[in-house]
Image (cartoon, rainbow, N blue to C red):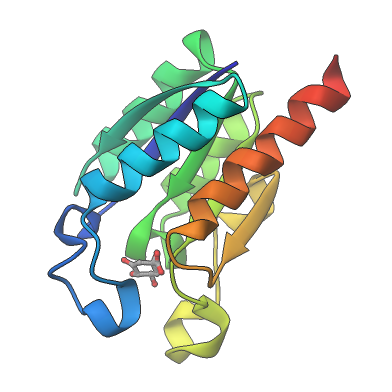
Length: 146
Ligand code: DQA
């Protein structure tokens, strides 16, 4: 199956950015590891990162045609982008929401995800393993559909 991994704002700075919260690995290092995990399960991954809301929405729209699922870390847009919520709701392929940190145990404004209701499920708090768990979750969903 084909899976698109979308990372939103500030996630291009992983490794440098608040490493005590987000870890010391770069996005590229995480993506490389994720690629191998997906390959072992027989899935093909593509990656997209953008700091702008419109580009994330465009990539969600585009993915509906060529992909079977999306793993999305929408960064801070998670907490206030109704437009990203609506983009997810507009497509039929499953979207798994991912966060490196446990958004429920941090600042008050992070506790609410406005995109969660439109997603197939959410995984947060496991660092880079949140992404791996999301690939595993999609794998289960694909198996179920067979
Ligand atoms: C994040 C959590 C968000 O609250 C934050 O704005 C991010 C990263 C995470 O992966 O833990 O940019 O999505």
